Image 1 (tube, rainbow, N blue to C red):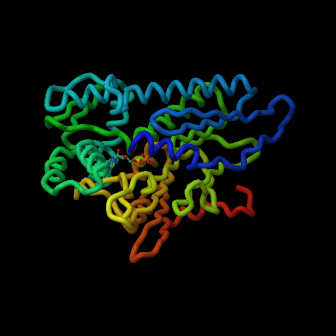
Image 2: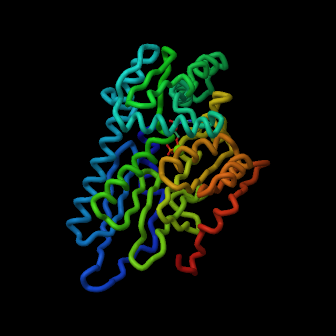
Image 3: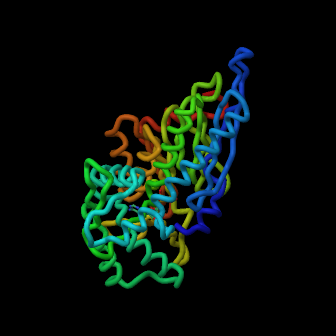
Length: 347
Ligand code: ADP
Ligand code: MG
């Protein structure tokens, strides 16, 4: 996705609700501290409960620095990143990579395996191809799609199982971690806040959220999901999150070409083409990296398969909003509705 598209979605995704500070005993009163930044071409909003304002601010600054460290390692937009170095080494021998890059690549490979390659971080050549043709206003020729698709193969990423080293087997391969890197970053930021003794935090990076603990005297965090039909608004029912991640992938970020057709920024690695009709896929999972990776993969699998996939997995829930036969439909996994909170009830 473009830098611009991300910035347009600034602060439009998840809204944190129901976290008014509630006094406990005088000695254990926690204050809510929140701050934002704009790394990775999107917004970052961190909310914590801390012993005092200063402790909260310091912790949030450290969380921002952790996200920045991950961006420096995993961004394909930055020439000097570890990922860019790896991309430049495609077709050559294995090279050492940072622990962050290695960890995201390992998790990506697991999600690729589980989803039959629906998530494929070697998607880079196809993303580049579609981006340039979108600018010109027409789809790329089939032959160019086929040529780019030949370079998309997650099994051609060799990861050393013991130490942080990686190899791209085919010359011209290009990795793009846009589908999973943000969820990894929110997990890492949350882990750091936890290590610093912050009892409850919610980290939202462009609609990819990791939450742990809960606001004082509340059973869970409440998070709003962006309403794809009303940009800037959230769906009527927020969801409760307790030590979980949630991510939404949607087609609102990038579309173009033929009038009346919306083209997603998510590509189907099997066809080499953008998805159509998958309006938004929200996944709740035990952590942020899983929610982020699955939200993209389940978009590719389509509504029915997405729900079947989630229902087979403990702790994974999905809600899919899609267009079919000119109408909008919503499908939820059985457990998703249990996470939704009707506005009149408290979490
Ligand atoms: P967002 O960037 O809005 O959070 P996603 O998490 O769904 O959305 O990631 C979409 C991005 O991932 C795209 O912009 C592109 O860079 C990349 N991508 C597109 N299709 C795939 C795919 N099938 N597998 C892996 N990455 C993809
Ligand atoms: Mg994703």
